[in-house]
Structures are given as structure tokens and as C-alpha cells.
Length: 78
Image (cartoon, rainbow, N blue to C red):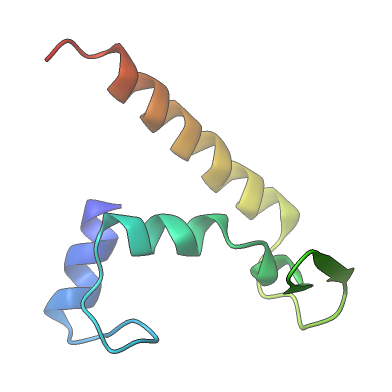
């Protein structure tokens, strides 16, 4: 995630709000179910409500990597 964040910031790419990217903004992108084509409005979810831009497999791979990163962070002694 750090490499992605550095790349985007170094190339002047801004978030939808015009800010620089941080670790939380990258995490939100990687876990956003809208990219699977799910339209979300409040508590309502409509599968196929918007165009899909990522496969289930790629989304799940990112989820697994994020979970591994989280568990390794929790296991570190500070």
C-alpha cells in the first residue's frame, strides 16, 4: 500500500476530495465493494447497479493480503 500511495502522490494524483493519498484512502479503495458493481446507498445494496471494474478474484486477493498485513501488525511487539 505504501508503494501505491507514494506512486500516486509523486505523480500528483489526488483523491476525489482533492487531497493527497494516505494509508486509509488506499485501504478504502481496496475494500470498496462498488468496484464489484454493487451500487450502495445507505443500507441498500444493488448488485449489478453500476459497472464492475474488478473481478471477484482480484477483490478477494486484495482482501486476503490486507488481512495478512493486519494480523502481522497485531503480532508485532512494540
